[in-house]
Amino acid sequence: MTERTLRIATRNSALALWQAEFIKAELERLHPHISVELLGIKTQGDKILDVPLAKIGGKALFVKELEEAMLDGRADLAVHSMKDVPMEFPQGLGLVAICERGDPTDAFVSNQYDNVDALPEGAVVGTSSMRREAQLRAYRPDLEIRTLRGNVNTRLAKLDAGDYDAIVLASSGLKRLGFDARIRYCIPETISLPAVGQGALGIECRLEDQELVDLLRPLNHADSADRVHAERALNKRLEGGCQVPIAAYALLEDQDTLWLRGLVSSVDGREVYRVEGRTPRAEGERLGRELAEDLLRMGADRILAEIYGYKVD
Ligand SMILES: NCc1[nH]cc(CCC(=O)O)c1CC(=O)O
Image 1 (tube, protein in one colour):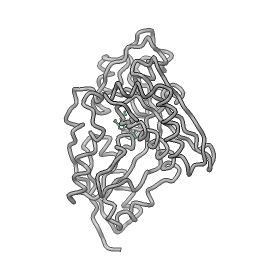
Image 2 (cartoon, protein in one colour):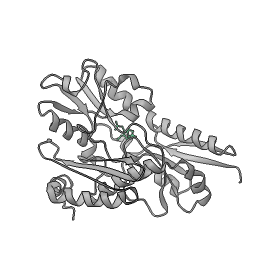
Image 3 (cartoon, helix red, strand yellow):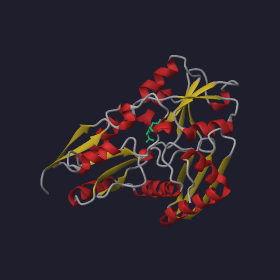
Image 4 (spheres, protein in one colour):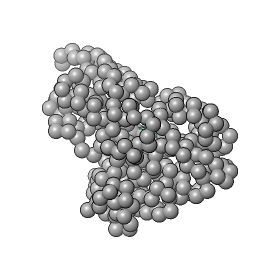
């Protein structure tokens, strides 16, 4: 095969750079004849830091500029946290690999308290996600949940400055950046069901670039991909991005059976609808769509209509 230099379009946050460097190293290890460069790009989501994400909306907040770079040939591929990847791709682009999933849980980080149960009444907890907020409120209605934005370093600094008694953020992000020691407790999925795709990386590229598609294929991890696709099917039916109180989490109970749990909650945590089901793993996406229908019937349609301003039908 010809020598080739691949360019990865990446955001400039520490986490995005770590993820892009990780895939660069994997590609260079798998294919010694290619070299890989990073192309740093600022996205809309990086520019607007002072407003809660849910308010600015837009499912493609962190990916649009990366996709433009691939479409106009400045870059060959993009590495995404699957959690941030929209359901639809621009014409000509697509997801060609989902890598082995890391820790999917939400991490409880605090300088004083060991876990959610140890927090005193009325404690102040920081999180930027409606999904985490809603589930924390459902579990501990007394907590005061406050917005927390910024990259991982900024969020930890705000905790250390005493702005919060605890913060909740993705375990995988903390681990990737070497902050394992800050995780006091990985919140079990029974309390905080993870976001769709949380902990998994995905790779997007131009689908007509067959040579590149072939180079990326070995990075796909079939077990992780089946789990994440089932979660995404549920999310797609609900038209969710990562800025709504929707959670979905799939596990392989054995090599053939996929177990999917899903949840939609009101932001105040007072209404929580939970579903779960099992299916042969090849049919995970169908199960995801079915469970989404169940959620809509149970009352999620009302909650989502309020958040979106229109009815999902
Ligand atoms: N929305 C930001 C974002 N996108 C992906 C991760 C973490 C890494 C992952 O889920 O793989 C984070 C940070 C967080 O949620 O705390």
